[in-house]
Image (tube, rainbow, N blue to C red; front, side, top):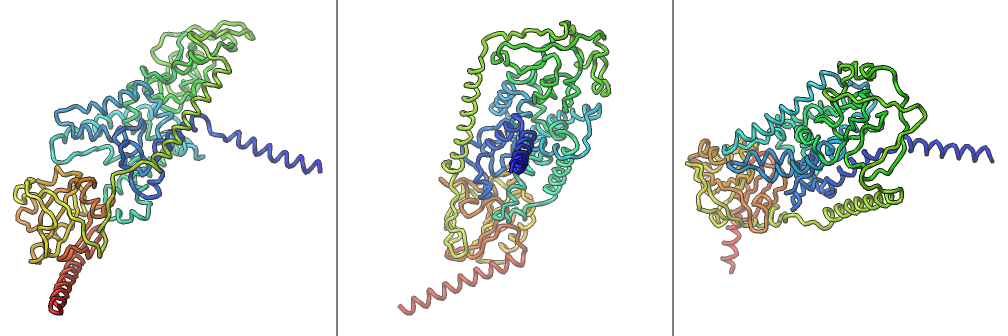
Length: 566
């Protein structure tokens, strides 16, 4: 019996040791907390819809795609590009101010603790494979993100200010957060199957790039963060002046280089523009020269064992791993005045007194309890609000299926010859008594533009059919030139989508969700006979138009018959 109890006890001890050895660190828990808080709209993953409520006007600190179903805020990098592209003569003060505020308070601590993309990269790197260590080559590559910041985030959007096409270049061509958090998260939902019609070469490129970056992150620590992320580059400018982060006490430092050797980022010194303030260097410093900024206000007086004095000169105290990277001996932290080595006798201790006020053990526990409680309440409140309380702009889908009467709407009409919007407005009353084809399209949508000639042919070939093309609210700057260049004499009626009272837009009013193109066909009485999200071929379009014509004629005959019977 004792043997059995010992075995059971040993089993539970081994399980306890396993959990203790594999328990997540505090930093990992904060990363997970931040990722979940940033994407607190969990119901979005269930419904496959993007949250569009009031908090979407605010930026979150880390790289998190606006189009992610769980996102409760906007991505600061995407907001910056859109603001620059549409700035005109006004500077995007709001976005620049938000980025500066985040940078001054947190710096690249955001990268180390609060960015969901940082968490994903850290988890990918934990996959057991041979790892590529940092070197001069990776240090040189780390400057690529600054080039991307200048070219794709700033120069390209500004180059298109005041022009028809606005391009948030980094989001459009590179950003893996948009590919994974936005596109793939939506495409995986079965209700968004109609979005597959919108996929093209650009998605293929971004998906391939996403896969390549994921594989790179398995072998190279934070490959995207180190080499490609412009947001990290922006926060890096604030790292030295940020209120929160790691700090080096030059008076205690012996230039041993352990901090630089231990760090997986391409840092030259603690707290420089490449440092993500993860704090892992604090535990490896033999002289306790690295600490958190502001920690002196919370650390009580303590005693620290001093290392045994070394008779070797400082030049020989450089860690071998640092010397292997080509950092000059005695200058592992490049360009800093040399500190004197500790000279205490081995076994003695040095009292370290913290300036300012100190919190005792009991006060520290109370302070931590308050912080943890507030964090838990914030997270619980966000989950409850976004999943049970928050109201989004209404998605009215009344009258959007075959057999329903189509909801009415009004919108401004384009002049086909000049491409300019006129004050003349279209409503269903304009095409009353005729079969009406309504097509939602956008100049940014290649499948939409590819099928427009089919609708143009229908408009010219069917005398009693009215074809109405509704241009998307997005990319409307390109519409005038595109219409006047391609359809100056077309019989199609081009109108511009716009808000309809409490409804977001005509596209939403008539059942649109995420994907373009979308087509509805109405009979002569305004009843919907056909709907489709995705591209239409000419033969299928003609068949559905003729079906609507036949249904209209049948209704007219029935009306005549009933009139005669009366």
